[in-house]
Structures are given as structure tokens and as C-alpha cells.
Length: 363
Image 1 (tube, rainbow, N blue to C red):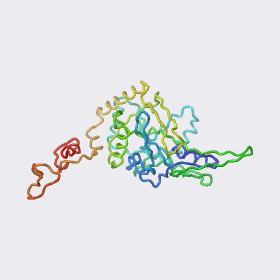
Image 2: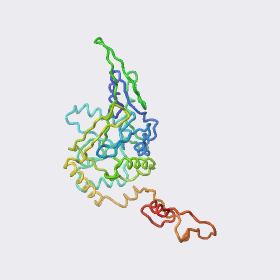
Image 3: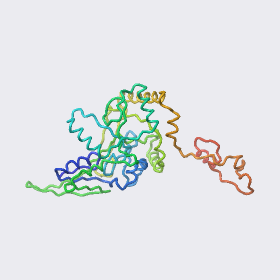
């Protein structure tokens, strides 16, 4: 019997091993297929901020106060990330075997993305500032400008590593993905009897999981973090229709560490990322930001098009009931005798944050 975890790595490994071996695939959490927060990209943010016991993600905060999440669902990190796909460097591996494995995955769950117009302009801008050559659409992890793959199809459905289990030998594999499980295997041999506990290891860190770190570091108290998570839980899907330009540091020198706090599978381990501890990593981040600034200043990057394609609201609604147009200075509706509105954001002509003015008016 071979046992493995339910992670993004465990699913394809279990499917492969089941061709010749009997496999038991263990994992906590449910399955992604009936979970709309996982299978639909429009609900991507909901899975990340859902803190209920049945959520596909489990939030945690590192010792250096980086807000993050780890997966607890069949398919692991591929269920809670944004779905970007690219191949790794095959140096030092059996190149033929590695490429065959990549092709096996890509045929089942990877797709070619449909680019928005501003993304096409972004490609031209990268080339304009010297990020060359242009490699077109490719899964290979190579220098230059390219368009990578995505786990999201053209209908907005995310395909996780759990779907790779369709290639399993059903007679040779058993999958257990439960919200909670505690059991012990009794095993015996000619040398006596022993008792072995089966523990599940979870791949905790994924490069594709964006950190929710808009809270300034000095303000990241436990209370502030919980309030942050609560606010983001109700974000509508439109919040993720904006355009994002992200930077990723390849092969960082800074090293973090991970320690188990206890043996409870539901408790998060202690994680220290140590991002940018090495000065070279920090400098590369700075260089990346400067490169991004050059890109958006390129003649090919049309800011007016970017603004139109990525416009979203931050839900500070106000101005629907202007003073002297709809109501007078005493908030009586013009043209009526005994109708007055309650003071709210509709009477504000302009504001950065209407809530602040409302609270000030009510205090």
C-alpha cells in the first residue's frame, strides 16, 4: 500500500502509481468539483477569505506578519490560486520523462488564456523596454516575454490537480478526502506487531497564492487581521476584474523556516518567510518595480485603454441626492411639504470616503 497526500503534487502522483500499485490517497477537506468557490474563477476571492471549517483554504499569519492561506481540499494549492501555469527548469532531471509528464498534465487541465487588449499592449511594452526576445505562447520557463498557460478555461472554470485523478486505475486506488479524520493502522509482521499513525503532510506554500497584505506591518495586530479577513469575505467578484501587474522574484536567496506547533492536523504550523532578508532579493524587487514603471510609460501601453478595460468600483456610493437639486439645506425634498430624507451618503457631492463623513455627521 502506498499512501500520499491530497495536494497538487499528490493527485497526479497517486494517479500514476495506481497504474502498477495499490494506492490510498488521504486528505483533509472536501472535493473541489461541487464547490463553486473553487471551480469558478469569479468566486476565487471567496475561497481565500472564507474562514469556516468547510472552507477550501485555511488562513494563517506568519511570524513575520505576512497574511496568507494554505489549501485544505483535494487538489491542494491548485484549487485556491489564480491558475497561472508554466513549466519549471528541467535541468538536472530526465528531460524526456519530465517533458512527457508536463504534456500529460497540460492535455488534461491547462488552457491557453484569452488576452484582453491591454494585456496585448503590455506585451508590446515589455518588448519596447528591452524584455526580449518575444517567445509567444509557451509553457516553457524561459527568459524574455511570453504568454503562459492557465488552469482556467474560456468559460471561467478552474481545473485543479484533482481532475488528474481521472487517469487513475480505479481498481487500484482509494481516495479519502474528509473534513476531519483520525485513525490508526494496525500492522503486523513476522517480527511482531507495531502501531503506526498515518499523518498527512500538506504543501503549505504556493507561489501563486497572493498575500493579502494591504494592512501596514505595524498595524497587523490579531484584531486588525481578523477584521481584514471579515471585510474581504464579502467582496463581490467584480473586485477581481481589475488589471493586475505582479512581480515575482525567481530563485530568491532569502531562506525561511517552518515548524510544527503540535500534532493537531487542523492547526497551522509556525511559518517564517523572511522575505527580502537578503539585500539582493530586496534590490531585485526594487528593480522589478522600476521595470513595471517603465512598461506603463511605454508608447505601446495605452493608459486610457487600461483604465477602461479594468475599471471597478470601491463601493463608496454617494451623490444621488444633491443638496439644492433634490433636497434643500435642511434635507427637505424640493417640491414637497413634509418629506425629509435621513442624512446619508446620497447628499454628498464628493468624498474620498463617504463613511467617514457619515460617522462624523452622526457624532
